[in-house]
Image (cartoon, rainbow over all chains, first blue to last red; front, side, top):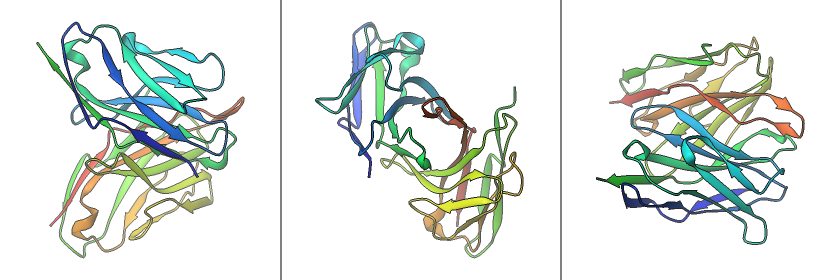
Length: 116
Length: 115
């Protein structure tokens, strides 16, 4: 079974300061990991994905995440927050072998507030 | 470039009514799924399909039915709506490539209220 824990339900940052969203996962397989962003009343947009290539993954809008197998973590960072980064972020794990179809397991989400 | 299209965007039902949420994708993806989103719980898998004619239950299937007669369409049926089914519903699709399935592509969601 796989599971995802997002360690902060809410994060508040000032514009121009770094953002750190923490994610720990558990999986019986070598997982694929994703970060999605959801702006208010919108669908989910892929920020970045890890699929067993480079452990440091760069995504859209200046976000990046580092896969650390020893710590079972996949934290999301951005050096400088922008007002448009205010949204909810989801860490997601899947079994890449397809043994369970493409079942995605979502974390509970982290809501980011950006202060001017 | 339609991607994944869900209809309707909003719906209000009375307890006991039935309805079908529509989902269509134009990317020829073999894998489709339905999720519900509730505050603080992320998205939870309701049902999924790995191809036309093949469906299976996810984490929270009770009260919902699905079928997959074509690759493109994957409707979700609520048999007898209950207030506990008030939620935002997302349809997603993906395909299998080298090393397994790709990321999921999501529709814009259907906000359902059961009164």
